[in-house]
Image 1 (cartoon, rainbow, N blue to C red):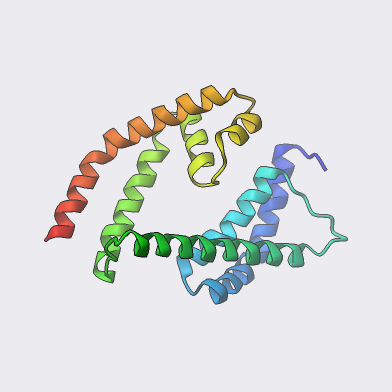
Image 2 (image 1 turned 60 degrees about the horizontal axis):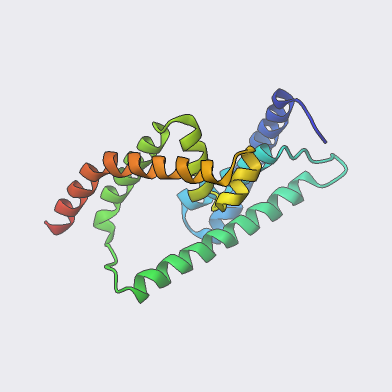
Length: 177
Protein backbone atom coordinates (compact mmCIF):
# COMPACT_ATOMS: atom_id res chain seq x y z
CA UNK A 1 0.00 0.00 0.00
CA UNK A 2 1.53 3.32 -1.04
CA UNK A 3 1.10 6.11 1.47
CA UNK A 4 2.45 9.65 1.64
CA UNK A 5 5.73 9.87 3.55
CA UNK A 6 4.22 11.73 6.53
CA UNK A 7 1.46 9.13 6.94
CA UNK A 8 4.03 6.33 6.69
CA UNK A 9 6.17 8.03 9.34
CA UNK A 10 3.18 8.47 11.66
CA UNK A 11 2.15 4.82 11.36
CA UNK A 12 5.72 3.60 11.91
CA UNK A 13 6.07 5.89 14.94
CA UNK A 14 2.80 4.54 16.32
CA UNK A 15 4.09 0.96 15.97
CA UNK A 16 7.38 2.02 17.57
CA UNK A 17 5.78 3.63 20.63
CA UNK A 18 3.32 0.78 21.07
CA UNK A 19 5.67 -2.19 20.69
CA UNK A 20 9.25 -1.03 21.36
CA UNK A 21 9.52 -1.96 25.04
CA UNK A 22 8.15 -5.48 24.61
CA UNK A 23 10.24 -6.07 21.50
CA UNK A 24 13.33 -4.78 23.32
CA UNK A 25 12.78 -7.20 26.23
CA UNK A 26 12.28 -10.04 23.75
CA UNK A 27 15.47 -9.17 21.84
CA UNK A 28 17.39 -8.86 25.11
CA UNK A 29 16.32 -12.40 26.11
CA UNK A 30 17.80 -13.67 22.87
CA UNK A 31 20.94 -11.53 22.59
CA UNK A 32 21.79 -10.96 26.29
CA UNK A 33 23.11 -7.49 25.45
CA UNK A 34 21.11 -4.32 25.96
CA UNK A 35 22.74 -2.29 23.15
CA UNK A 36 22.48 -5.14 20.64
CA UNK A 37 18.83 -5.65 21.60
CA UNK A 38 18.01 -1.97 21.09
CA UNK A 39 19.87 -1.95 17.78
CA UNK A 40 18.00 -5.05 16.58
CA UNK A 41 14.59 -3.54 17.35
CA UNK A 42 15.53 -0.18 15.84
CA UNK A 43 16.77 -1.93 12.71
CA UNK A 44 13.41 -3.63 12.30
CA UNK A 45 11.53 -0.34 12.58
CA UNK A 46 13.98 1.40 10.26
CA UNK A 47 13.47 -1.30 7.62
CA UNK A 48 9.70 -1.03 7.97
CA UNK A 49 9.92 2.69 7.40
CA UNK A 50 12.48 2.48 4.56
CA UNK A 51 10.49 -0.15 2.70
CA UNK A 52 7.23 1.70 3.32
CA UNK A 53 5.60 -1.33 4.91
CA UNK A 54 2.20 -0.68 6.39
CA UNK A 55 0.63 -3.70 8.03
CA UNK A 56 -3.05 -4.42 7.68
CA UNK A 57 -4.91 -4.25 10.95
CA UNK A 58 -6.33 -7.67 10.03
CA UNK A 59 -2.80 -9.05 10.14
CA UNK A 60 -1.27 -9.40 13.54
CA UNK A 61 1.05 -6.38 13.73
CA UNK A 62 2.48 -7.64 17.01
CA UNK A 63 3.18 -11.11 15.63
CA UNK A 64 4.80 -9.70 12.50
CA UNK A 65 7.07 -7.39 14.51
CA UNK A 66 8.11 -10.14 16.93
CA UNK A 67 8.97 -12.40 14.00
CA UNK A 68 11.03 -9.62 12.39
CA UNK A 69 12.88 -8.95 15.66
CA UNK A 70 13.53 -12.67 16.13
CA UNK A 71 15.01 -12.92 12.63
CA UNK A 72 17.10 -9.77 13.18
CA UNK A 73 18.43 -11.23 16.45
CA UNK A 74 19.41 -14.40 14.61
CA UNK A 75 21.23 -12.25 12.04
CA UNK A 76 23.07 -10.43 14.84
CA UNK A 77 24.10 -13.73 16.46
CA UNK A 78 25.18 -15.16 13.10
CA UNK A 79 27.24 -12.05 12.37
CA UNK A 80 28.87 -12.24 15.82
CA UNK A 81 29.84 -15.88 15.21
CA UNK A 82 31.46 -14.88 11.93
CA UNK A 83 33.40 -12.07 13.64
CA UNK A 84 34.49 -14.41 16.44
CA UNK A 85 35.62 -17.04 13.93
CA UNK A 86 37.56 -14.39 12.00
CA UNK A 87 39.32 -13.26 15.17
CA UNK A 88 40.16 -16.87 16.09
CA UNK A 89 41.26 -17.91 12.59
CA UNK A 90 43.49 -14.87 12.16
CA UNK A 91 45.01 -14.99 15.66
CA UNK A 92 43.79 -11.49 16.34
CA UNK A 93 43.98 -10.29 19.93
CA UNK A 94 40.77 -10.35 21.91
CA UNK A 95 40.50 -7.14 23.88
CA UNK A 96 39.43 -7.19 27.48
CA UNK A 97 36.56 -5.25 28.99
CA UNK A 98 39.02 -2.57 30.08
CA UNK A 99 39.13 -1.60 26.43
CA UNK A 100 35.32 -1.30 26.15
CA UNK A 101 35.49 2.42 26.89
CA UNK A 102 38.07 2.90 24.14
CA UNK A 103 35.94 0.81 21.79
CA UNK A 104 32.73 2.75 22.50
CA UNK A 105 34.48 6.12 22.14
CA UNK A 106 36.13 4.99 18.91
CA UNK A 107 32.81 3.77 17.57
CA UNK A 108 31.21 7.12 18.48
CA UNK A 109 33.97 9.01 16.65
CA UNK A 110 33.71 6.79 13.58
CA UNK A 111 29.94 7.27 13.42
CA UNK A 112 30.42 11.02 13.83
CA UNK A 113 32.80 11.06 10.85
CA UNK A 114 30.35 9.01 8.78
CA UNK A 115 27.63 11.55 9.64
CA UNK A 116 29.85 14.33 8.24
CA UNK A 117 30.19 12.68 4.83
CA UNK A 118 28.47 14.41 1.91
CA UNK A 119 24.83 13.23 1.74
CA UNK A 120 25.12 10.91 -1.26
CA UNK A 121 28.42 9.43 0.01
CA UNK A 122 26.87 8.86 3.42
CA UNK A 123 23.77 7.18 1.97
CA UNK A 124 25.76 4.88 -0.31
CA UNK A 125 28.33 4.09 2.40
CA UNK A 126 25.57 3.24 4.90
CA UNK A 127 23.76 0.98 2.45
CA UNK A 128 27.01 -0.81 1.63
CA UNK A 129 28.47 -1.18 5.10
CA UNK A 130 25.49 -1.23 7.44
CA UNK A 131 22.83 -2.84 5.28
CA UNK A 132 25.46 -5.03 3.57
CA UNK A 133 24.07 -4.35 0.10
CA UNK A 134 26.05 -4.94 -3.06
CA UNK A 135 26.91 -2.05 -5.34
CA UNK A 136 24.48 -3.32 -7.97
CA UNK A 137 21.65 -3.38 -5.41
CA UNK A 138 22.46 0.14 -4.26
CA UNK A 139 22.65 1.40 -7.83
CA UNK A 140 19.27 -0.12 -8.69
CA UNK A 141 17.66 1.17 -5.50
CA UNK A 142 18.92 4.73 -5.96
CA UNK A 143 18.61 4.85 -9.75
CA UNK A 144 22.36 5.34 -10.24
CA UNK A 145 24.98 3.59 -12.30
CA UNK A 146 27.20 1.02 -10.59
CA UNK A 147 30.19 3.19 -11.51
CA UNK A 148 28.67 6.15 -9.63
CA UNK A 149 28.20 3.95 -6.57
CA UNK A 150 31.83 2.78 -6.84
CA UNK A 151 33.10 6.36 -7.16
CA UNK A 152 31.01 7.53 -4.18
CA UNK A 153 32.22 4.59 -2.04
CA UNK A 154 35.82 5.38 -3.00
CA UNK A 155 35.26 9.00 -2.06
CA UNK A 156 33.69 8.02 1.30
CA UNK A 157 36.51 5.62 2.15
CA UNK A 158 39.17 8.16 1.23
CA UNK A 159 37.55 10.82 3.43
CA UNK A 160 37.14 8.39 6.33
CA UNK A 161 40.74 7.13 6.05
CA UNK A 162 42.03 10.69 6.23
CA UNK A 163 39.78 11.75 9.11
CA UNK A 164 40.20 8.57 11.12
CA UNK A 165 43.98 8.22 10.79
CA UNK A 166 44.54 10.30 13.92
CA UNK A 167 42.00 8.26 15.88
CA UNK A 168 43.70 5.01 14.87
CA UNK A 169 47.10 6.28 16.00
CA UNK A 170 45.60 7.22 19.37
CA UNK A 171 44.01 3.78 19.74
CA UNK A 172 47.28 2.03 18.92
CA UNK A 173 49.09 4.11 21.53
CA UNK A 174 46.43 3.42 24.15
CA UNK A 175 46.41 -0.31 23.45
CA UNK A 176 50.17 -0.58 23.81
CA UNK A 177 50.22 1.09 27.24
